[in-house]
Length: 623
Ligand code: F6R
Figure 1 (cartoon, protein in one colour):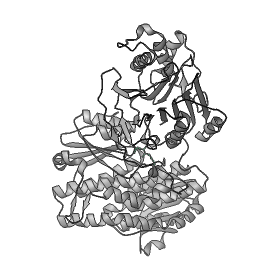
Figure 2 (cartoon, protein in one colour; figure 1 turned 120 degrees about the vertical axis):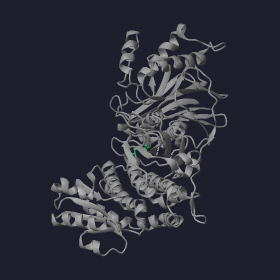
Figure 3 (cartoon, helix red, strand yellow; figure 1 turned 45 degrees about the horizontal axis):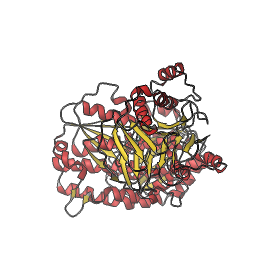
Figure 4 (tube, helix red, strand yellow; figure 1 turned 90 degrees about the horizontal axis):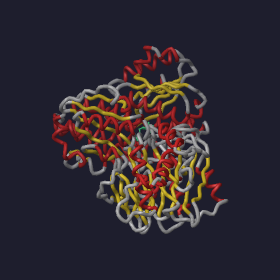
C-alpha cells in the first residue's frame, strides 16, 4: 500500500528518489511525486498515473538538492489525481510529508486545523499530517525543546512528535522542512519503514528494494518508533522520545534479484524461477544422509511444537490458500487438529485459544495488517506463535515467537507465485518435522525427503509446457466465467488457480471442492464454461473422474492437470497439462504451476499489465 522513499546525503536526490519509486511501484501505482529541498526553496512535482508520467514532467525541471521525499500511491482517501498525490505540503509550503497508511481521525483533525486557519488542497487523510506538524512547528509555545535544540531541526522534530501523538490509525512517514535542510525525519506505526545507512548518505523506504542499490546496511524501524537523520548520523527513539538502541542489519537481497532478467514481467520471472527458489527454500533443511528435517528458526519452540494440541493458521489471499494446504498436511501427517482462518476475520470473532495452541501466520510480505492483527490477537490470548514469512526483518517476522523464512527472494509481481510454493514447502517440512517426532517412521520420512528433493527438477519439466498452456489460454481467453475444481490437497490449489486468473486477467473464476459442484454450481455448466480439474493420481482420483463425467455430460469444456502417463484422462478432458508423479502430499507444489502459467498467459493475451493489476497492490497494510 503506497511506497515511500526519502534521501539525505551528498548526491542529487532527484534521480535516487525516482529510481527508488520505480523499485517500489508494485506497492501502488495510481499517482506519484517528489519534493526536494533546493538551495532556495522546496520543489514539488507530482503526477497522476504511472511513475513514467512523473519522469516525463521531471525532464522539464532542473531539481537540485540533496534532501527529498517521494511517494507512489495506492489510493485510499481521495481519487487518484495530481492534487491527491504525495508529497503533501503544509499550508505554508515549507514542510513536506509522504505517508503510507490511514489516519482514522483525519476528519476531526482537519476540522480543528481549518478552525485554526489552515487551508487544505487535497481530499486525502495524509495532508492533515503536514498541517498538524506545521501547526506545532509554528506554535513554538507548545514545543518541549531539549537543551540546545532551539533551531529549526529541533523544532521540526518536536513538532513531529506532538503531531504523531494526535494521530489515530497507521502510518509510515517521512518529513522534511525547508528551514531545516539537513534533517530528515521518519516514523512508523503499522506501516513498514526501513532506514538504509550508507557512506555519508541515508535512504529511507517502505522496503529494502529501494535501498539495496545504495547500501546493504539497514535499520528496521519498530512500531511507534522514529528516526531523526542528520548529515552526520541518526538517532532512533520512540515517538514519545524514549531512546531506542537501533540494530544495523545486513540486507540479504542482491540487486540482481529484483531485476527483470530478460523477462517481460516479474510474474513470469517468478514463475520460472521456482525450481531455483524451491531449491533455496529446501536447501540445508533436508538432510538426506541422516534422513532428518532441520528447521533452525523453530529450535527454541520445538518441544512445544511436538506437544502441541492444536494448530491455528491465519493468513490472507494466496497465503491463506497455502495455509489450507497446511491444514491437510498437519492433520494427515502430524495428526494435529488444525484450523485455518482468514486473518481479517480472526480478531472480530471470539477465537478460542486453548492451552497447547500454536498460532501460525503465513505472509509473503510480513506486513499484511490483517495477518499482523491476527498474530497480535492470538499472542494476547496466550498462543505461541510461528511465522512463515518471506520478507526478512518484516514486522510479522519480528513479532512472532519463532519463524521459518521462505528464502525464495523478493517477490515483486503483485500476483504471488513463488511465495506460494515456498509457503507450501515450508509447511510441508514443518508438518514432517512434527510428525517424525510424534509417530512417523524413519523410513516414511526418508521417502518424503527424497520426494521433496526431486520437486525443483519436476517443476522445471512442468515449465516446458508453457507454450502449450499459452495456446489453451488463447482458445479460452475471452470466456468470462471459469470453474476450478479439486479434491483433498487439490482443493486449495483450485482456489489458488481461480484467484490467479481473476486478479490478473479480470475473468470471473471460482474454485470449489470438486464434489461441491453438484450442490449448486453445476447449474452454471454449459459449453461456454471452461472447467479446470486438478485430477492427478491420488487417493481421490476415481471420485474426481466421476465429477468430470458429470461436467462432460453437460457439455462443459474440461482442462485437466493430470499425472504424466495418464491415458484415461483423455476420455474426459479437452486439454491436459501433465505433472510428474509424486506423493499425494507434495502434489500442490507441482499442480499450481500450470495454473499460474494459465493465468499469466490469459492476462497477457487479454492485454493487461500483469505486474500491476487493476486496483491491487503488493503489500496490504490497511484493513
Ligand atoms: C494474490 C496475492 C494476495 C496475497 C495476500 C497476502 O496473488 O498476492 O492474495 O497473498 O494479500 O499477502 P502476504 O502474503 O504478503 O501477507
